[in-house]
Image (cartoon, rainbow, N blue to C red; front, side, top):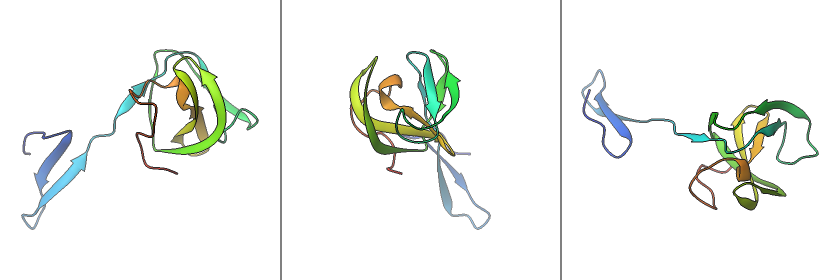
Length: 102
C-alpha cells in the first residue's frame, strides 16, 4: 500500500493500475441533538445524539432553517438512511456544504 496523500490512499489493483480510496471523514456533534427522518423539525424523531459523538455525513440537503450552537442554517446532514441532523449541531468547519447534495 502506498503512503497516504491528501487524505486518499493509493493501492495497486490486480492488473497493476492505481486505485484511489478516500477515507470517510467524521465530524463532532457540538450539543445534544435529535435525529430526524427528514430535513426539518416536523419530521419524526428517529434517535438522539450526544455532544461529543461523531457522525459521517453521507450527503447534505436544504431543509428547514434552524438556529443552533454553530449559527443559523437550512443545511441538513444525512448521517444514514432516513437519518438527518441540522448542520448547526455539527462542527464541519464551514457555513456551507462540505459533502455532496442529496
